[in-house]
Length: 153
Ligand SMILES: [Zn+2]
Ligand SMILES: [Zn+2]
Image (cartoon, rainbow, N blue to C red):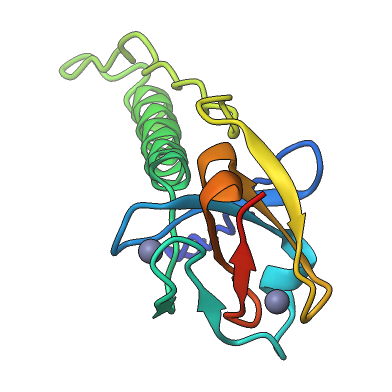
């Protein structure tokens, strides 16, 4: 048995295939298409709010989901270990092991709670799309893909 557990947390996207992101500097929330995020030729991502380039954009929701998955994994491991112990000591007169109530798994929260309304914005310069908040759409901002200024509408 291997002691190494590999897990892959896939990036959850909304119904239109956009992944929720948040700028670590100004906390602006926006969404980008999964294929654009995975496209290796698009290395830089501009924040539509402050116009800075960041390497990591994460939302609280994604982080929360990651930690829930890890907690559930731990609960499963502990439950299995208890069951094994129970089997191992079965019939032993001196030591009785009884598995306690299994640790319940927590619901892994669905991503994309409608906290903000988003509009799909297409950049005139690079012709790529991004979802920005209604406010950002109104006041204008930067294209996450090329950093171009986009006027408000
Ligand atoms: Zn920002
Ligand atoms: Zn652009």
